[in-house]
Image (cartoon, rainbow, N blue to C red; front, side, top):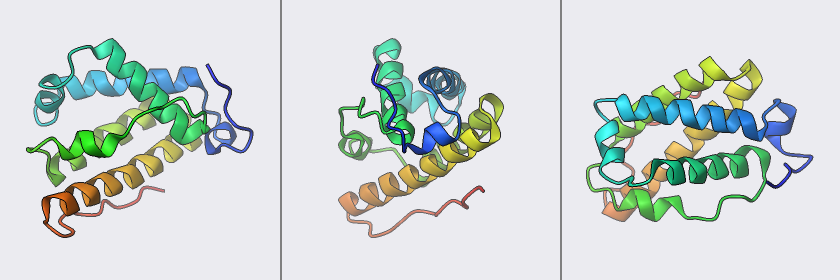
Length: 143
């Protein structure tokens, strides 16, 4: 594993790779049980261990600036025809609930802020790709 960069926002919030793995595991366990977004994931994820490893690398890159993630989430999300603002709202809600349950307050706040920014970006990209213009509800930022 790569070490976080000294100036990473996650380091200041007490985030490490173990906390990221716990958050990712617990969150996606909840996702898989969710009536709205669970089926979207179950239809596309063949190997959950591999998927969770990739998502932990993604969050490590986001909050620790580790550079572990090698991928492009936008095309993956654009390809999901049924994805809507309701799916993003539920994802963000579950993510925030899980972050608050497993992380210290400063870490939870950072994860939630980044998830909201990522959600906005993905929704905008999907909307523009579909030719919808900007067709999403901006979630309220949680302090």
